[in-house]
Image (cartoon, rainbow, N blue to C red):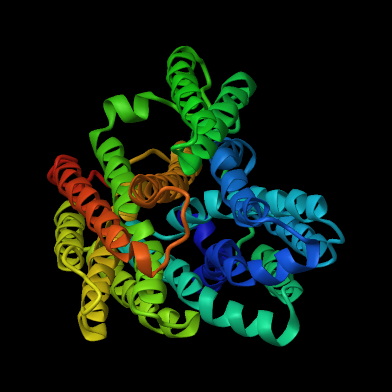
Length: 463
């Protein structure tokens, strides 16, 4: 509203949002660098070490949608600030953890706080910026996410080596405190367009339980218990859809998907996009270190090409989506991703480093061109009272797609090498597994191109 404009320092607000968008993926990814050090201090086995990373991602994913609804009801700024406070507290406790269980508990709480921030940040940006500036602002915010991913292996490695693993959890504290104190100055108004509604506790509990089972199970396939969890989670999600369809005030309005083609197909495209791209870094990292014999630092130097290119392109593609149809921009991005994946399909032990970097750069261009316009399309397709849910849905598609991507890669690797460690005797099998995984991702990317094109000719932007 015009009367609220003087109360919003939009540029300062965007900077604060970008700081949280940087630190969120950084917290999720940088800890992987420190896992050997953490595992050594607490005598963790490999499975327990994986839960240091998994607990954060899983907790974030399963509470995003309920937090988005709470933000629409009680205020997006309020939930955003509470999330920063939770992250500051949990990060401090992680840094001072004295046992494995203490660290895992506060990593999960840190993930919940991260979901409160990530699930409201896009909604706040959409609320604060008018439609003709929204794509640019969203593009800047998406760029901050990619910068966080880019900095994670480099900055995380430096902090861990120089100051110990605890320093990774100290970094979010001053950033969180800055955001806590500066945000009330940047924006004095609140957005709570669904304040008259009641919170759907039943639907939220079903959703959290079902998503937990599905995401845990899919990440651990092909273990029999994991398969059972995945099936149970899918069944629970189908039941959740039935419950929400009949609810007066659903935590996730299924009619948004049924009656809003742009919202539904853009979210499907986002899910497929993350499912086809996230595990590529995992696969190429193993390829570089085991097949090519690179050190982790050398491998990281090559892998950083993709997120850096994502960050550069996302800034421009966000601005372009203010003027051009997001359907065309996003579909072009998915097509470029498919080309990049095709280039990686024939890699072998003699593939040059330059070829790998070129393929990763093309993937980065495609992902950057897809993500900002697609997010702009999602956020611009719903009424104000659904902005928190839309923001949370974007985050849910990201995390669910990432989990599915890793699940596919892990399953294929298991089919070819079983439980054996990667070594020179099974490099051929590893390459075959890599080729099949990339082939699956190419097929998914073609489906993603269709979903992106099928959303409709042009979004109906809602101010």
